[in-house]
Length: 96
Image (cartoon, rainbow, N blue to C red; front, side, top):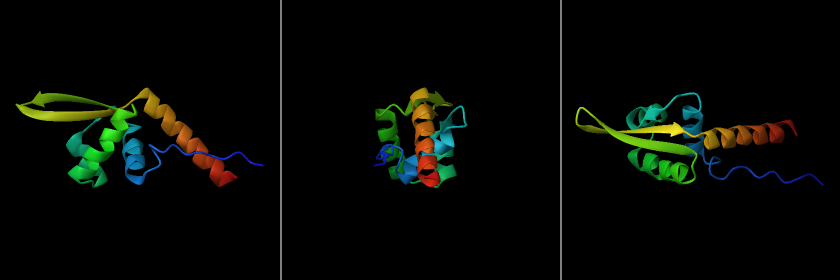
């Protein structure tokens, strides 16, 4: 009997998959750029970033630029590893 493949529940959600895929090849991304690039609402960004940050897939930093708050996100090494594993599992499913 074949082993049951368990996909990463954190990443295997369409919006979070897109966020991780966007961040994987970037040093970081600010809130506005990420939101606009993926066509997300503030609510989607907030909800999904909370999950990714709490599970340590993404880190967040805040600073002020010209007296305006700026939030920046970066994929963690853990997040990169989990995404690679996720892609490997998808390949295994596809290739049988």
